[in-house]
Length: 181
Image (cartoon, rainbow, N blue to C red; front, top):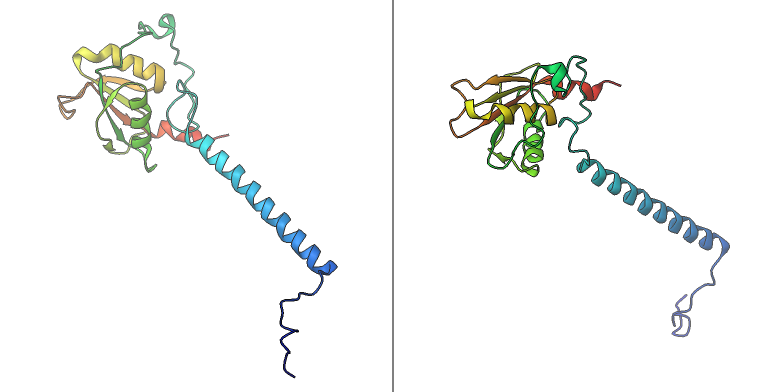
């Protein structure tokens, strides 16, 4: 059987209930996928930009040391509430096995106004250490109180570059709390 020119003129069959429900189902599925993609995108963006600048820098890190207090009466030292950050050069080293921690911390400090050198790696450390030059002790104490509660604050050894005021060696205390409840 061959088709006549009048049969091939573009006529379509009328829609059936089956094709209507199939079309409705695929449209609904597409809408659900679109909504899920938007929700996932919003969650990713929200988690990419933390809003609490006073919290410790490691994701989920908290101060677990009961002896630490920013109060000068308990700690025996005077905090510098408005320590200058402009002009303070900081170098961050990752002493953990968490990839990218020094880079993320450097970005946070840069956003806070510090001049930050290229981050790098250090030997594994259990506690965060802030090394300071002789003229930068107050800036080191401020950095500890503001961003690294419980970190050790020590005079800089000879290995710290001369053009760096503060060197932060990130210890596992910056990532350890993220896995606890």
